[in-house]
Amino acid sequence: MKHAATPHPAPTMHRASASLPPAALSVLLALLSFSACRTPEKPVPAPKPPPVVVKPTPPLPPPLPPAKKVFREEKLAAMDAVIMQAIAEKKLPGGVLWIERDGATYSKPFGHRALVPEAEPMSADTIFDAASLTKAVATAPAVALLLERGRLKLDTSVGDYLHEFTGEGRERVTVRHLLTHTSGLRPGLSLAPPWQGAERAVQLACAEKLQSPPGTKFVYSDINFILLGELVRRASGESLDAFAAREIFVPLKMNDTGFRPSAGARLRIAPTTATNNIYLRGEVHDPTARRMGGVAGHAGLFTTAGDLARFARMLLNNGELDGARIFKPETVRLMTGVQSPAAVSARRGLGWDIDSPYSSPRGKLFPVGSFGHTGWTGTSLWLDPFSRTFVIFLSNRNHPDGGNVIGLRAQLGTLAAEAVADFDFTNVPGALPRKE
Picture 1 (spheres, rainbow, N blue to C red):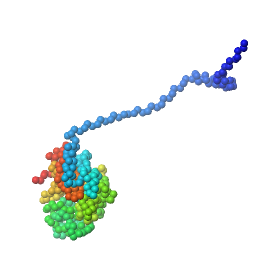
Picture 2: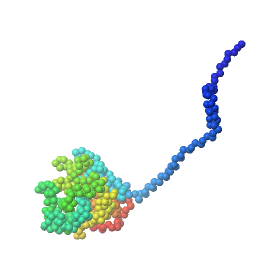
Picture 3: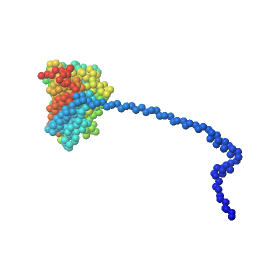
Picture 4: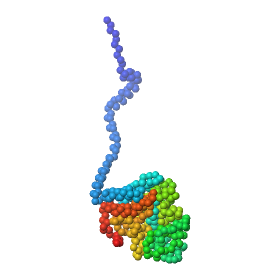
C-alpha cells in the first residue's frame, strides 16, 4: 500500500538564498559574520541640563507690634465716626478724607457727592471746588516760583509791578503784605454795581482804599490774591491757570487739578449751590471768581484728594516728588515759615496759615509751625513737617445749601495727631510757642 507524500513548506531564508548568485551570497555571509564579531558602540549620553538653583524664599518680616504701627486704628475709626455724625446732622452731604505719614495712607469717601436733583454716592476720585485752597495750592506757589527766579521780590512795592496800584499810601504795600494778608485792604470786592471780567476786577482792586496802614493788621482778603494773580500774569507773561499747570500741576501729575474743568469731568465734580435754579457743577462757586471767568488768584481751582496728597508729599519732601523738582528746599522753607510782620499777632507764611483764627484744621495737638489752609466750600489741607503727617478733608458742605465743617475740621485735626502712633506731640523740638 502506497502512502501519499506529505508536503513540507520551504523556509523563507532558503528561498531567498536560492535566488542569489553564488558570488553575492558569499558577500552577504561575510558581512553577517563581521557584524556578529564587532563590538557594539556605546551610546553618546545626552548633555545634562544645568542644575536649577532654588533660592530660598526670604522670611516675611514679623508683624509690627501695636506701638510701632503708623496709625492707631481706633483713632482712624473715630475719624470715620465724627464725619458720619456730621453728615447725619446735615452739616455736609459727604466728603473725602486722606491722612498720610511717610507713605502710610488712610483714605476714604463718605456720604454723597450730590443730594439733588438726585442722590449720587461720594467716590474717592470726586473733584471738588477747592475755593480758597486756590490761594495756597496755585497762586502762592506760582508767586514763590517767580520769587525764586528773581522775577518778583518779596519786599518790593506792588506798584512797581502794577503801576496803576499807587497813590493814597498804596505804594507802601509790598508783595509780602499781600501774601500774608497784612496789606490793609478789605476782605473782598463789591459786587454792586454789577461788573464783569478779570480786567475789570483788577481795576477795582487797584482802586481799593487801604483800611489800615500796611503791616499793622491781619485782615484775610480775597483782594490781596486777586492782585497776586495779576502779578503772576505780568511777571510770567502767562495767565495764572496756564503758569500753574505748566510749572506745578503737570510735573506733579496732578491730573485732575486745574481751573475751568472740562465737560468730560463733570460727572465726577461735586456740585455746590444753585444759581438761577441750576446747581453749579464745574463752575466756580465764588461769585467774584465767576465774574472773572473762572480764573482768579483767590478762587477757581478744582482738585481731588489724591492730587492734593501729591502736592503735600512734594512740600514735605522739600519741593521734590518722584524726580520732579518744583521748588528749591529754601523756597519751601520760605513759603511755610512765619512771614507776617512781628507787630501782627496772626502768624502766616507766604499764602499759608500757621497760627490765626483760621487754623482750626490744626486741632489741639499738631504743633504751631505746622501749616495749611481752608476753603469756603468745605475743603481743608493741613501739613505737619515735624511728624511728616498731612490731613486732607474735602467736602461740598454748601450743597444743596448751608452746612458747616469748622468744628469737624478741628476734630479731624486732633484725631489725626492722636492717630500717629510713635510721635510725641507734647515735645516737638523746633515748634513755635503757642500764644495764649
